[in-house]
Image 1 (cartoon, helix red, strand yellow):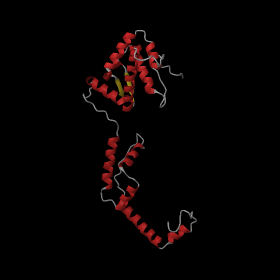
Image 2 (cartoon, helix red, strand yellow):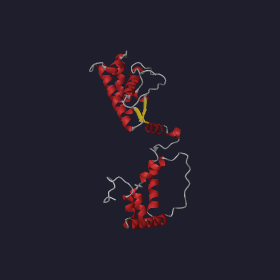
Image 3 (cartoon, helix red, strand yellow):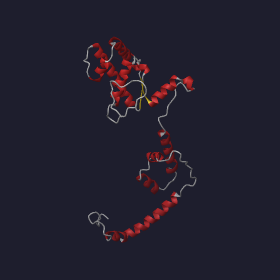
Image 4 (cartoon, helix red, strand yellow):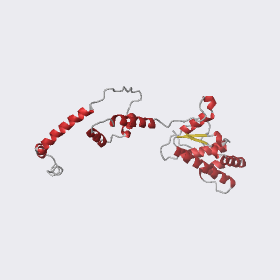
Length: 246
């Protein structure tokens, strides 16, 4: 592995650049973009930049536009030839032609092909609607989240609002059994997992009655101080478990 030389790295073939967060990926891409315009005489619309997020594309567009303007000002003599942009400009033999290329790039910057992956695919499908046999205005789904949320809400409406015991609902709410909980469960599923619908619904009412019966028995024992006395004599930490708190 060798350190990237932004000024002299070849612009032919395929290059893999390894970079972590905050190491200047936007800065690097912008300067490579500038070099393609100046050294390869590529018009702006012939250069494709694809990144991950909308925020990243906005940042790239802003940075590339500013670097093109900076290089043009150097060629026009209104700014000193400093930094990497200055070094790139100094390499150019035909300064007049370079200035014309940069002016054209700024004038046609709205045509810059700087996209997210989804955005590039959508643009390609629109531009090649006949070749791909796609509608003229295709829609690309951003994921399954909306569909999964809809299923989660349907599940809650179906199972939580059909005469379930109050105690069960209270417990479910105390455990934060919200739609987002069921959505998160789907993320734990193995992709090829086969889900078989369970037609036998648990006897929630019977279980709730059994729980209530046990609770009343415990309450009776509590009122008779049996459980309280066992706790006080169990050797618990007296600083935390005092008689009035128990």
